[in-house]
Image (cartoon, chains in turn green, yellow):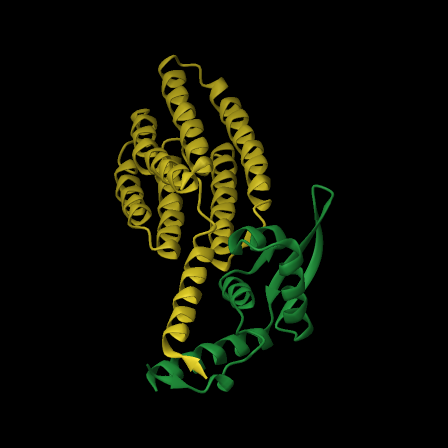
Length: 98
Length: 197
């Protein structure tokens, strides 16, 4: 079986849940916490921790809003996040075609 | 070092999440059904009021029908805002329908009450506006059903310009059933099926 160097891959994105978050946010304008949680079947704690990591890296941003007087956190991908994700995909393809 | 199969799996996972996320906003067709039924009732009422020579009620009937339609639309649209996710395609589609609805309302009322547009030619104009909006929706979602409906509205609209009597209301009601209400019902059935999965 072919083996190759995975150091090319952005470690911040290269985890199943964070990869799911990035893939989801790149396809929508924004998604609320509950929507991401349901879609990726994650627990509150695990999702929060991973969202925070991506937020700290400025790959995603959060904005708080109120829907029917209930606070909601809406997440969207940043320009930095988009280019990191595109770079990640391109590296994955390079690794496969290697 | 990473296994090639694991990388391939990652790519597949990304594709799947992107595809699922894009499909998250499925149109229910409820607003299309609502307006379809409302307009069919109003068109048939116009036909029978003209037949009964009760012209004075027609304007009021349309004001009540259109105002009710807008109120229900706003309530349904607010519910949609609570889906917790939004895409650019969805925003463009919503903007197309809101602007088309406003244009149709203004042209319909201002045009007829001012006397600038004859009551019998309004339906032809409305059909053209609807063809426009259906075509944009069809292109955004690459939906053949809406593109076909758009062609139906344009052809039907062209025919309507030659019908200069009360039968314009009957023809428009049939067009509303074929090119809006039925596609709306099909969309609703599809939505319910996918929701049940």
